[in-house]
Length: 282
Ligand SMILES: [Zn+2]
Image (cartoon, rainbow, N blue to C red):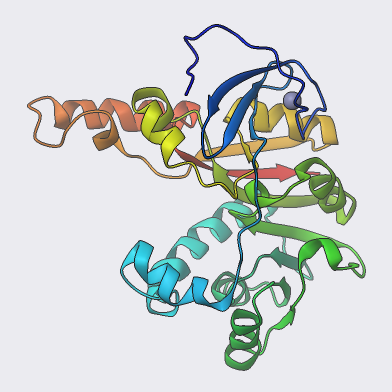
């Protein structure tokens, strides 16, 4: 196991985003993590694909969140509405807009998009169980294939991908495909884990040890912004995915209330959070 403070090792590993071989190995155990000295992301050399079967939405989801994906509908729908409000604030006019969601799961975001006035929506989802639920329940079109195997027809005005990019082996070409499928002024909206957050800064070993093996890359807001600008996006808006002062100071601390106030302000200002939401305009 290594950490940032250890001697710097230059590896032969190649950054999947900028292809630089100038990297620093920061962790080697069940996964092999490198920090790219060129573009600033963290990438996992021992990345392995998750066997993404239907049980993700039932037993596996329950193990992690205490309920099935379907039972979590209200919560996921509410988060989706917040995300759509951000999109609508940037895009303003969505009349006739075409929206695609990559990894549309059981279709709760697509349903929220329809309810928000975006009528032309399409999902891509690898799980047959989840795709079928969306089609049967919401009558929304879903392509039941992995994104890489899909040949997209036509252009879109909004492409959303929540917690998708970090799983992809070649995120650079995936984002280029997304960029090329967007109309001018179109929005690529996504969420992803961020290492510019309390867990990486204050509980780094925990962050390393719990890092999922199926995650290929980790962004910081700055590295995400630079990457997206290089691809050609004109404007980038980044928000913290969640604000968690309790990950820095215990809730029982005398200073917690005061700290929470300042922490929330700073977190919003610089997107200091373990996850982030990004809205990139073409
Ligand atoms: Zn790089």
